[in-house]
Image (tube, rainbow, N blue to C red; front, side, top):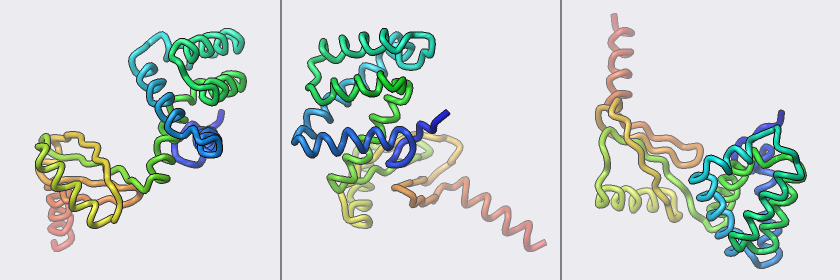
Length: 186
């Protein structure tokens, strides 16, 4: 079975690159972006839609009809409707969430934006998130969107990941490093 990882490689990446290139060429990037964001929200909200996308027992024809009706009812533009039809015809609807995620990554890169995944021991205030965003923007040189999450096991500090770069200043990691250093001294 093919890989469904996001990014510009793998199955999802190839489909995402194709719809992105078509959207740019047809000057419909904003419309396609809005349609895919709306579709992503629908997938997140509807268990029935997730079953439709992932079920191997629903026929290709039934999946295509259902997705076509959904796209029509949602008011998606022609390019997005055709793209969803191609994905359904190729029996790749199960990859649709990963395709949308890969498309969003390509779009951010195209717009010169980066996403920082920030994990902290406790929830960050809006002021802290803004200050962190300002510092990351200075360090990276591009607009940074921050996705925050909480992991109480960090004890304190932050783990920041931007692209392939990761900065781990958590208290948990520092204690582990100290423990390893003390073991090495003995």
